[in-house]
Amino acid sequence: PEERKALATKIREDYAKGNSQINQLSDDALIDLIKTTHSSASCEIIALTIPTKSNNYNAVSLYSADDARIRELPHNARATKLMEACGHALPVVDDGTPKGLCGDVFVGRCIDDEIGDVWERVNITVEDVEDPMNAE
Image 1 (cartoon, rainbow, N blue to C red):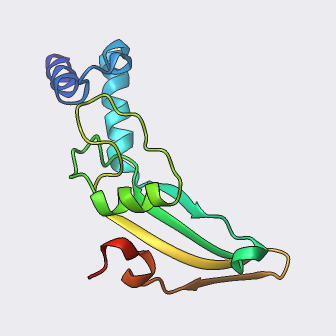
Image 2: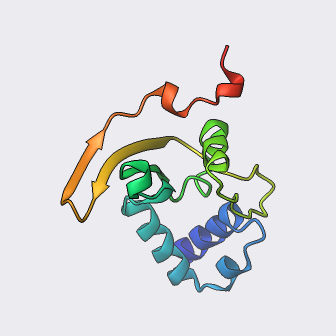
């Protein structure tokens, strides 16, 4: 019990950073939450384009670790700029870190035509996502 209390206190110190919800959890609930978060791999998916007839059913999505900010992974400026260029608002953060995505991000593209029963992953290149205003 004393070890669990010490662990919960350490977790609160490391993760709370002004998050009152964490501070309201019981020690056991907090420890279970951290175990679950770190034992299950999951990602955040952000749809940059929705497949429609007008874009030849191209879908482009960003995939990132949903706990990247909690794990204090570095800010990903390139992925954040891509997200903004596609019209997405940046998530609100109040922990003093830059807004946007953190950690490694995978960008994927596919052709997704549900009516035509077509789903095919297609290559996406650096040139496809480069900002033409910054090209040399």
